[in-house]
Each structure stands twice: as structure tokens, then as C-alpha cells.
Length: 399
Ligand code: AMP
Ligand code: MG
Image 1 (cartoon, rainbow, N blue to C red):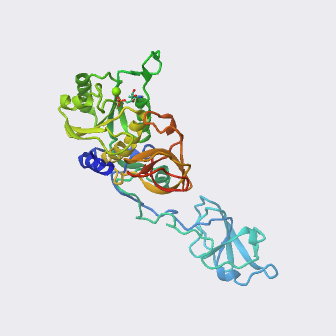
Image 2: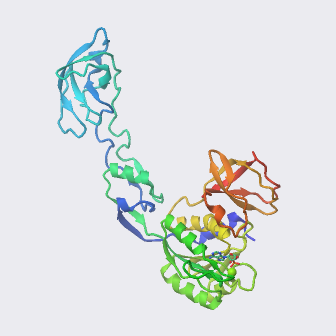
């Protein structure tokens, strides 16, 4: 049996990142993976500017200014944000500036208008200002040449904002990963169909489709199939033509209808491993078909989703060119108690807030999906642990 770590590294070793790259408009780059470094072609801001409403001047001219003995300067003009006029401010002069206006290079400070009489032709300054004060320097946010996005980094909304401030219009990204998703089980019905005795509505197909969309994966969601090995093998072989990875749920355990032990050979796929020493999702089965990974998850919805997060998500990131695909781990303090002993390694769903971690419900069964709602992490309980008590330090995997 594999460990979580050995199973994941086996999968990552076999996942060949997509080769395709494309140029997309900045607005379409959200969630995509950068295919090259992006350095700033300009300083941001592009010029020294005022961060407040006031007057730009020479600090020496107001060195001794006070309420009682104001310094009086001649106002040579007014510059607002966007003002393209180049002013020259001589000694004894001041330029009225509004927030965002350029500060002329000979001025070494800006005084806020609250420390003046706000005069239009002449202005009284009631306080001194240190040299260099109240000037936001060119390049202070991003200096020209600074790398803003690294190759292999996923582009976030903050990246998009910064790239826009650099004047960037197009971004080179890796092609989207194409994943085929197939859920299997004789018992599955689609919402909309009449619920008959013994049948259930399909949950995995919906939750994994939504999760693939959240991850920016181009999903080919197949209709769920009955537990017929040869037919499922044919469907997967066909789907593999246009997919970089195959993900399935159901039929990987030891029962009569656990067809995937027959599906892989029927496809001509190589089996990489079966079973991982974790709960939920122990019977996960993985293979390789024509160089493409096939990840077969247990049908139990929590098991399917947890193992998707633990294995498929990092693999999808790696396939998509991400250089840092592994889930983030952290430590937290357990709030509430978990009475069961854990003979084997166990993952339980929870919500982490401010260093504390709370279980999202009492139903820890791998068949329950409802307690995934509100869950933002999994508590990773090592094999051989006793019951957990309120206040225990635990390790979590952030989702
Ligand atoms: P299996 O992995 O096929 O043995 O299924 C394990 C359990 O998960 C059974 O109770 C199935 O009915 C249930 N199950 C399998 N597939 C799904 C699905 N797509 N949606 C909801 N439950 C499922
Ligand atoms: Mg089944």
C-alpha cells in the first residue's frame, strides 16, 4: 500500500506538463498559469507624485515656519492628477498640488494643505516639512525591470491589477489542462430523473465538475455510466483522445461491482498502484494510459472529493505548468473533540479560522458530502493516534 506522499510523488512523476502555450488578453488571464516571467517595462508610478492635497516646494523655504511666524510663498500654479504641464518651482515659490499630481523634480517635499491657509496667489505655511517628505517616488510600487509574475505562477486578481498598472495587455500562459471526468455506478440517477428505490442522485459528477471549473481546468464531463467494465473501458479510451488526464469515481474497492480492476486491463492501461494508507479513499486506483494518468477515486463522495484535493488537484496544477502544485500545510489548535482512535492515517473535514480548527459536523463517514460544506481544510491525523481533545495541536492541509 502506498503512503499519501509516495502515491502523490508517483503521480507527479508521471504527469507530463502540457506543452501548449497561448497569448491571452490580460482580462482573460485570471487563474491561468504564466508561461514566462513578466518584468515591468516602466516605473510605477511613472513619475514622482503627491500622495496628498497640498503644495510642492523647497523644504528650506519653510524650515522655521510656525502658526505665529508663517513662511509666505508665491503660488505659481495648480497641478491636479493627470496634469501634463511641467512646472518649474524656484526658491520662494510653491506649486498647488492635488493627490496624484506630478511633483516637479526640484521640489523636495509636499506640505499638506491643512498646514497652510490654502492661499491661491500667496500661501502661508504654518509648519516645516522635512526634505523628501510626502513624495511618492517614481518606481516606488514597481521599479522598471522588476519581475511581477514568475513562469509557473498562477495569475491572481492582484497580478492582473499590477500588470494593468504596467500597461501590459497580453499574457503568455500555458494551455488549459483538459480533464475527462467519468462517474460510474448502477445506482446513479441524474437530478431531474424520478428517484426510485435503491437509486441515488449523482453527487460526484456535480461536485467534481464544479471543482474543476474552480481550478480553471477544461473539463470534459462524460455522462455517468453503469458498472460494465468493457463499456467503461471503451468510453475512457475514446475520451483519452482529447484529454490530458482521466478522472473517474466509483468501482475501485473489492466488491463484485468494483469494475476498475478490469477496466484498466481492458483499456490497455498500466496499473501504477492500488490503495493508499489513508482514510477516506483508501482504495484509490491509478494507472497510465498512453502516457496519460488515470486517477480512479472511490465513489463515496467525501472520499472522492478529499482524494481529488489530495492527489488530483496537485497533479492538475503540475500538468498545467504550475511550479508549486502541492497543498499548503499548517498547524492549528483543535476546537472540540474527536473521540475515535485512528489506527491508520485519517483526514477529517474541518474549518480553520484564526489558528483554531473546528470540525464541520459529526458525520465523518466517507459517504457524507454534506459536512464538506464550509470546510476549508482537512485535519491530517497520523496513524496510531488516540482520541483528540479540545486544545490539541493538529496538522491541517488547506484546501
Ligand atoms: P463505490 O466506490 O462504487 O463502491 O461506491 C461507494 C459508495 O458511494 C456507494 O454507497 C455508492 O452508492 C456511492 N457513490 C458512488 N458513486 C457516487 C456518485 N457519483 N454520487 C454519489 N454517491 C456515489
Ligand atoms: Mg459502485
